[in-house]
Length: 256
Image 1 (cartoon, rainbow, N blue to C red):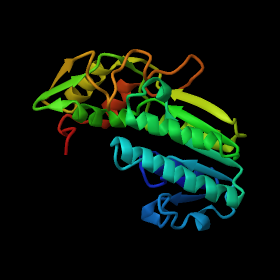
Image 2 (image 1 turned 30 degrees about the vertical axis):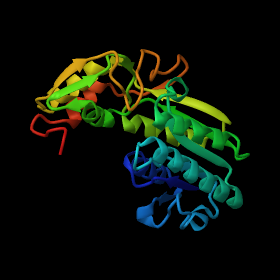
Image 3 (image 1 turned 60 degrees about the vertical axis):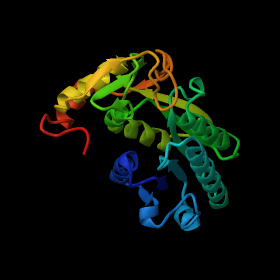
């Protein structure tokens, strides 16, 4: 089966391409680096020709409100039009758990706009909503940093390893379209301030974490339900402490 992974050279996409190829599928890693651009439309028709499944894991290069909305709307419209013309039978997209609960976040508003376009396209689809990746914790810390202080919310997150997201995406892509959403999350809920503090300590980063219930998370305040999954979510197997022990070395700072 031919599967096209949009964003196929990124963190999630590259792992997903490898997983699906090991399963014996014909997989196209589509990204501007490989001559396929979902914003300009370059190479889309050729990449999607004969494809049964499209998996969209592309991300915006900018999180600025207008830029991120323009990215997801333009990219999705182009992908859906090309997919319809190519006869794609299943459109899978990666989104974010809790997008509808954080309207102040321009990024999450953009993901909701993407979801609506997919649901209204007429192409059979499945949207996989994931919680925050372990691999993103360093960027969260950087976003809340002023000087040597990191101000972050104590609200609960339910972070997940990117490898567990990839496993869920691969399973969904090879199954029948749900014409709905699937949630995936990590196996434990962790206060964000503790999560960031653990990451910085493991990386021997000297910054100090300050807990602040009003600290913004990419434009929005959080509570314990903002970015945690529902009871029916598929849970990944990897715990944050185990991932941290294998990934972050004390002699490797979190900021390059």
